[in-house]
Length: 478
Ligand code: ATP
Ligand code: MN
Figure 1 (cartoon, protein in one colour):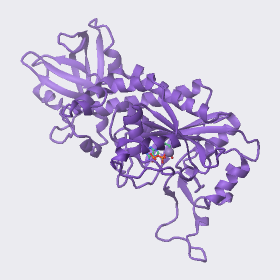
Figure 2 (cartoon, helix red, strand yellow):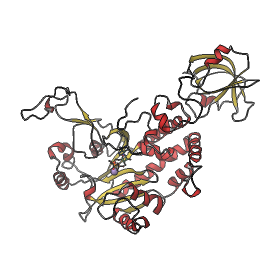
Figure 3 (cartoon, protein in one colour):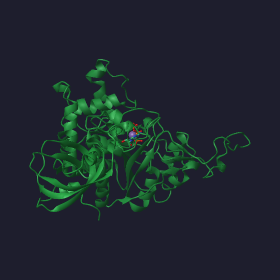
């Protein structure tokens, strides 16, 4: 089925056997004695070197073999004479599938800025950096499914289009088929959504959790892994308008079980990447080291692989929100007025506070629990004191919040009370509330932003660079 992948050819013992290699030219180099073509097919970060003799091919043909062109090369697999690779292909035939005019092709063999590459997102997968990121992203996605499958979870597909406007997790994108130039009106003059496709207002989902809970109340352990949309107009390095979220939801799990699962889960998927993505991680590590070369020693971060191993090998620090506030109040930056935002019990921690706790104080991932009810969602279980809820946020170095989760309120009365308190019409959530009426159970779950995980594992600074075609304010080109 199809040609051999370069990844596999590079592992094959050279016995002068004939091989066919198909891929894109990374570089072509001509010397007195030979012409070297480095080919890559994306199966690995490593190129295969194909070698021809001067005069073996017409100058006309060789002119079309340029960076970015696509070739079929036939030849013999031989032990490599040169350093840097064990095998190479002694070319007998070249077929050019597609040329790439060097005058026009934007990816030349030199360093391009990540900003520039974002403008050519249709071609950036062909760079070493994005090839590595995309392979690691794949490995992590695979590890996620494998992890949950092994643990007896079922993959539940929750809807992308939702009509519940009560999730409250973020600003929503509207889904409509109404003619925006000729909107149907009610007698009062409001837009008449009864005439819209679903007969009501509809949006793209901001979270699959509420439906996930319905699944957990039947299958016990489920997870979702799907596209999620937030119309927050935030131009940060950690927010996308379209991202992928993983949301496990478990019946009979309390907050402690939830934390144990979250910690084990991220450690296992990172371990999977460490085992299966060595070449790509090494490449990204070197890239980062190179980037930080000009920084003073004490400002450089740990090499990527060490950072990942550290997270896998050490227990996450667990403490309550209240304890975290105490630490922040006693901290040097607070006392010296260096924090931009004020600290005090009841505040929503801002990223500078989270980063202080993780990067300066504990120097490892942190799980914060039992947040004030006012700053968390209505569905979180109230603590006995009535002031805090059983929330847990997992905070990572460089990223901040990577996971947000909680034990859910399973009492019908308490949940209904919270729904009314924050001004949601219980009618809109009748199906969600019924889970608490019929066979309610203690349960918990969390949401992990997949791109934040990929960011952490790849060490990429901007979330726009860890998804093939990022969506953010004023950008949906590709
Ligand atoms: P933040 O405070 O960082 O904006 P949040 O508290 O709004 O996140 P949750 O509603 O708890 O996020 O969503 C669960 C997880 O989804 C977060 O921990 C994060 O990993 C991820 N996430 C949330 N919003 C985004 C976004 N706009 N782009 C990418 N990932 C996101
Ligand atoms: Mn959150």
